[in-house]
Length: 215
Ligand code: AMP
Image (cartoon, rainbow, N blue to C red; front, side, top):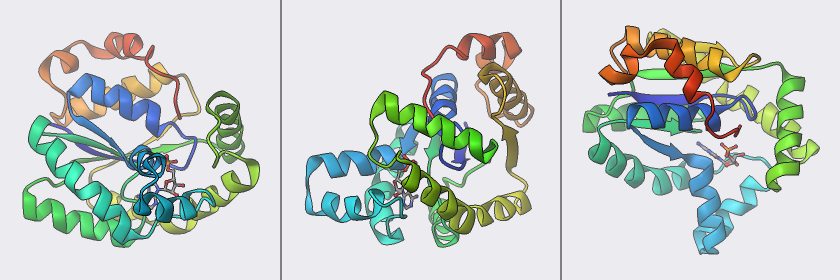
């Protein structure tokens, strides 16, 4: 079963491809950003602390992230046997702590999907999403800041996971179905797709390409 980390700058398609992967593997989709937004919407003390960071496009401190995410990852992985972690880890300390946590609980990640697209394409997708969904952190200034935070805090994870031999780098500056066909091939070659999905090949990815247009 796939236990994947989706690593991507904002706007490169981690939401879309996480949902596709979840749908076609049965693994649980755990979106760090969605969980944080839900906490903010609840209006809890924790939510107020979280909002102070997310509104500026800064990363929420590692301690808060673990408090919110760890129970969900354990429960979801126990329930489905796999997970697609969308937006976590995002810093080296998060990655190292997640690796330790995974080793302790026999939940170590076996795939890291690194999605890329040119910066101006990322900005334009996020501005489109702002018009569609009205996310408060999809304004031009905050988008630029989130991209800078990605470059500083999250980009170092690429080499870390490449060194562990579990990284797939995919350009999403092309049709979704092509990205999904490449993803399917790579996961199938590693025995990480359930047999039915793996056998149905790229046509399957074409059909799956009709899933939600999120970034
Ligand atoms: P996303 O929905 O993935 O774009 O995340 C939205 C915001 O949530 C980010 O800009 C951060 O402020 C916060 N966030 C999401 N994931 C993390 C994480 N792993 N560590 C710290 N902050 C995070």
